[in-house]
Image (cartoon, rainbow, N blue to C red):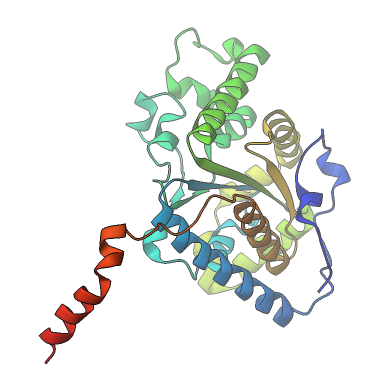
Length: 294
């Protein structure tokens, strides 16, 4: 398999999505990519067990991408070796009536992972500067003071929202949440093929909605606003990675590799030491339990 540096996919300077390829050749067969992914997810699972016992850090994985980018299958394949107690997935849909009674970050805040656990956001708080940017009328449903019409939703409003997102991520990062954000960068032609497959395979028909085609017509708007959001919010404590996603297997390997490398950079995650009193009497406890079986 091709030797790659995951840092090549991290956003550290201003980027143009048009200049970034949506496909990558890892110089490996599908079988080799699956084998590599299996190694990575086993290591991730082992590390998560230690992190769970250590109980000081949590990890927030944010996944964004156009429809059909492969978010659901990536979650299934990357985290399949995790102990179920160690990872919680949240898929954020259209805000509910209850959620609209709070600020736009509320539903994401209450879904943050506990210490020792991974939280995966399938679509994230960034929907509030993406979908709402493409469809500003959605903002009116938030009932924000001073926002009475679309004309009230100015550039200043969006700048303030980016500031709020950056502040939110900085706060949770400073309190022990490791944040990794992945944009699954899909080509428009590849999306067309995937939508066709949904229609051609009866068992996948349920995934298709006519709304998918309406959103596809707004492709350029979404790309513009994704680019802006990534450029304004990729920070050292909460970096964005742009993952070429025309090939799902390659994308899964890259995401798993990025997570594992980041976790290995945190040097103070270790299994807790056994209490000294327990350690001194461990043979006694063994003897008690052994006698019970006699």
